[in-house]
Image (cartoon, rainbow, N blue to C red; front, side, top):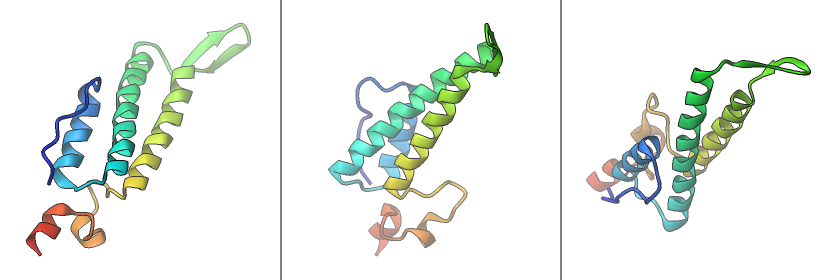
Length: 112
């Protein structure tokens, strides 16, 4: 378990992700770089969500009705986040992390 302050520049969502991951997992330096990117993506997703909520999922253009570009970018950023989290090998909250990833779950490793 590492006590690590969230890097400068992260917003609420990014800071929350950083703290939760760093509290539960021991990361190598190169993994912290991936986590930082994931945190930045979370912050972008939060901003895009606000844009979508303030507007609509479709927009009217000279070419007709089309998907709001924020929705398209949200989908792309969500896929990038999923790839970052997969690269870190961090289980979803609904999974049993200790059983599926014993070498990565620091709390279990600390008790061995």
